[in-house]
Image (cartoon, rainbow, N blue to C red):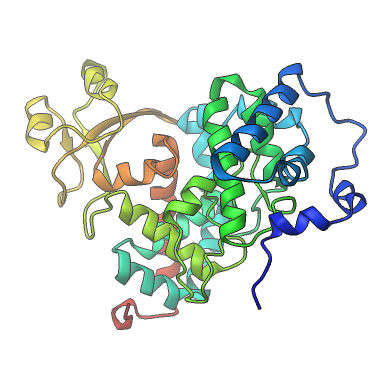
Length: 346
């Protein structure tokens, strides 16, 4: 029997049930005047662009609740902190041990993802660990509230979040999700790996083979999708990720200012007096990264695989946290591995 998509089922749902889904909080701040104006414009745009019924949109987007706490949160992201304060958030014993336990529990799936996409298991585990603490915190905000708040009342990035709200509505039809019950981060990221809706639609995979890309509850799909995402963003199988840089200093600020994308050959860096500390580096290009560490300024080289991680979250701090957490997880896992990666098959 053909299933009716959740968005269309809402047309016949009693309004009382829809109202019951709204947060019952007397502390909700009133939305700014532009919120309702932008909401109406968005509903009209979606009806024209995708043929959505306007009544249907009123019963979904029209139920979105403005959340001032979301505006407050996005104006002070963790990535704005220096490395000495950012690193301790993720490099904790609980997160390291939790990553090793997650790896042991899902070793065969991780091995298959590594064989299929070339991304090491520990990197996949570390990303899920940084994003949601291995599924322990996938977000408590209704995604429709988060994206409407940012799309209609956060001018700095309104265009981006309006497009994400559009992608979210399309996603809920494609994957038959109820748009009023899906929850995620304050920025609208979804599931164990915290994919924003456009990334969910573009990069997630049905790694379990059950016919649905389910990042909300399927660990198998989450693992496969993280690996597929990095693969699609030019992860180099067997390539180096990063290395501490020797010889770098304030005189090399122009290399740092060149940005995150690797653009210098190792020969160019060496002529400037900069060398990787690691003796075996497999890469073609590098960037130079400056971090404010607990013991002073640190300089690192970021290779193509490091840059691939920054495509997940466009921050050198984020990518470095993933790399260093992955190294600690691998060390912890190695003390009691659960599965021989060499026996895995795609």
